[in-house]
Length: 339
Image (tube, rainbow, N blue to C red; front, side, top):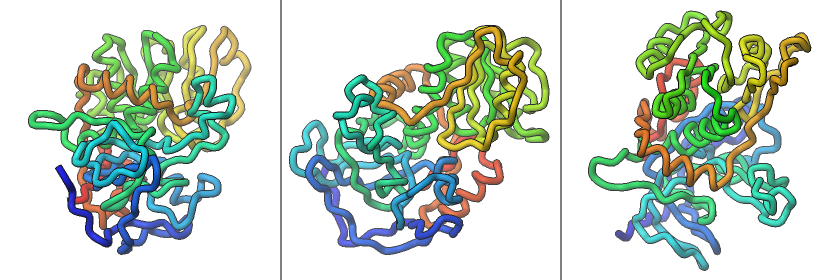
């Protein structure tokens, strides 16, 4: 299926942190060697996009087109690209390029590459009608009647992948706490339910809608972050960017348990008693993802099956989507639709 490529496209662009995105008309980019050109169908709106816009991520490429949960169809292939065909549906994640030669890349830890580039941060992303991406960092996606739509697939490319990596780093723990019940949490919750592991959902005080959403997804217990769960947790996944949640989660942890901080940015973690860490408890962070994470999770998701709850926004309404995410009124994920 060949896709018609117009000379220009619409894109939402960040020029300076702290300012709204601007709707612009830009030339459609051309794929260079090793790149694919995508006609974007949908792009998820992630909290990392808020961190970018708020100036909490250092040294972004400016001006930049945000967006790193991209679902689109191949519209063009640069020299040297194989394995993709025109019209094929593919996904583009946060990790957009690595050097392949540093000690991290050579040891299977490309997520820690010192020279990595990230989609929608150091590489123009998916808040646009077309984008280019390194073919090595794109994933084939299921496509066809009865399968998830582009809007439903988009949140899997970051919320799903980062949530999955966070769960992997927590290990095969039984009782799992989830702090911040948003896009990543509602996907991880479905994986945990599929695996038969109970999860305990912690929300902001008074967030009745998120608490009800967690119950619908099978939470063993639901409360706010100031409350104590009915039993100690074996692990806690923190998706909210609030440092004070770390000692709060640690205080509820069983001996040998782990707190996993899943965000790329978090406010400072306050001091806490050593006694809360003692007993071989640990705290660790998640940094980005590897391509193997993507392959493993995208293989698992349809077997769960994961159903993403999405709120649709038009491309031109990206600022409204970001504000809704900031206010915490989205249940599941916000997604920009190009059509």
